[in-house]
Image (cartoon, rainbow, N blue to C red; front, side):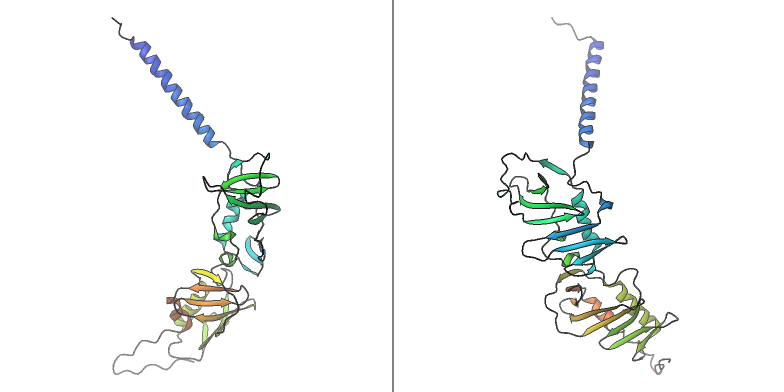
Length: 296
């Protein structure tokens, strides 16, 4: 008959098992926390220029100036700060696998020729096909072929419209003149807005609200502009004397403005058309009273 296991022996065995499990967990965490190789050596804050080149399409170029990103080609426009983050994310994305150069068929991997080429600062990244198993993207940087998680983003598309800032005006731009189809506004030296023609609806509060609405206007999305459409022109004057123009494409089904400089159509909320193209109607006076004449 077997003797019962000594309690001390049992405790020692349990202690060894716990230590082994703890050591295994520590090693696994250490491996997980180990620095993973990134696609480039460019830190997110160190990125200062980027470009996207598709075959038979104009090259898209961006540059960081004074801390702000700008499109420099194929048009000159402010860049969307959120879309530009995709370039920084690509620079620091984790390399899942680096392939041995021996026996590689670049054509089979979609790298000869590449589908598209992205350049981050001075580093050229060639994009190939995706692998059929994990849908990771083959990329080539210098003489290295690597696999990364496929960076699905409109920022890397053939067209540039998603890279154009959705806001019509930058945060540091001040409006001093607004010319709409049926109304013009001018900001006086005292900071108050005046309207031409004057009307009962053109109260100081209504004019200020209209001007602030335009300053804060932002598109829900941008579309490729194509040829400049016919339509009424809206003109805006900035404090530094610069002029900004838009063509009113329509208000159905969206409030749509075309930019002749950025060559895109800003698609704004339909509800903004009534708020930005006209002043609200003045409230009806109480029965028995006549409306006051507008003050000059």
